Image (cartoon, rainbow over all chains, first blue to last red; front, top):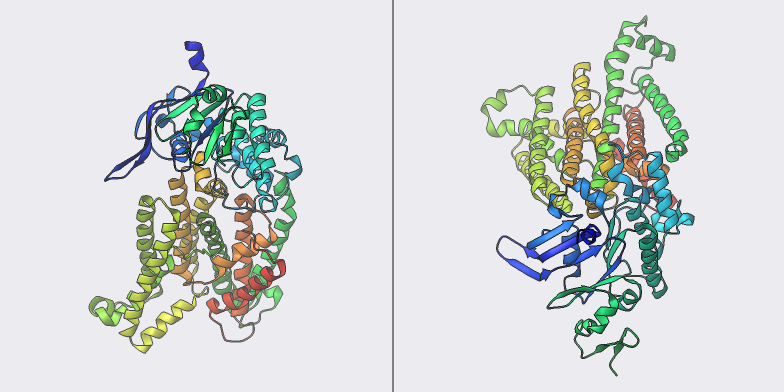
Length: 264
Length: 342
């Protein structure tokens, strides 16, 4: 029992998520019990408006939880100071960066901010970690380009390199495949899978690419209107979980091809 | 870092330009003084007492003021443009000049309205400096209180503009009830002026200015992190509220004192960061901050040299010159490069 718990990076216990204002509380999902294991690629899927973003925002402490418990490395998430959290968890968000006049190297180097001194000078170690992250994501050829010169797919790789440079055990990506073509969607998710294998980091991403996620993830978290289920893709298929994901009037999940089919 | 070396040449060039502009500024004026005598005056060995006085007690403090004003406004403009992620932001978006203007308007124009103590008060330079400082300080206080409660940085921008509208409305009401003489005095203050400061005043100016510069230097790392946007900055462990307050405080100290001592100098704060970015093609504030400092000082010295119309007795309002010379330069640069880097 003790051994397995050591391998768990992030764990929730009866977590409820939603929004709280002074007047009322809007609950989006309750009873969430998930555990992210070290060295796994985890895909979070669910329909639009089901609360994927709210869950990610709660896991990353952007917004407070409603009730339940949330542990990062066995320590309650709310006990983390900003700086400690930055050394334990890095993010790739859907929003675009404010200044695209940064060079790729500069942007990746900003991932070292939690480790640099008061004026942000990069040490030898910082520079080698930045270069390593750039090599790991295959963007050496872009190193000196400005961010406004990059395509969406290239920029996404740069943002992943930045998260790698932050040197955290856990990386969380919010819909990293939006705006990308089919090739780059597969490329980015395959890259994440490779990084998990090479670095032993835990990577959690949310996505609408259920077919791809089934093929690449070690674990999937499926959010439906009634519950949040987490298991290996195979088990989830056997249990018929994907059939409950969407209303069945238009698309159904085909277990043989492991993909969704449009009803004729 | 290698990047610092890339810009070494540009920095050396800028420093040399600054030195040349500084001496050009001192040697030009309504009275023409031979170059040799200028150097003699600076070391206190001039044979001509009035030249010595003109150089040491008039032109030198004016040149120093120009450097402080130009660099301070440039840096506070840069801070605001990064904080608000808006290329149109300048040092005065927080309503600080409006506050200063209101303070000055109350003293100059309000005299007639309130009578009594105000009317009997001699409107000296110090009264205006104190009124402007108080005005900008009160607006700063309001902005700081608001910014500690508001989550969205853009809301602060709007609130700053609103403060500006309120104060200009009050100034209009005051102007309506004022005499022509008072109005003229107020308008003259609005022209801005670099040349009225004694060494004592320059010293006080410099002390407050240094605090502002010090805070800006402390803000460099946070400013660079903010280039990614606030959510990324937070995920990198940056304390957004604290950085925001440091940046606002630095801007307020710089823009507030500059307005108090030199009047509301337009344009420099908005334009200098853009001019700098055209030459230093980077967003890294470790490079931009010193570059903006040098650029601001140079531009202000040049504007001041033009404003005093060498060898004539006239001195044009510095505020008109900064915009008259500066705006076409920025337009020309942007059209030529076809791209605004921000």
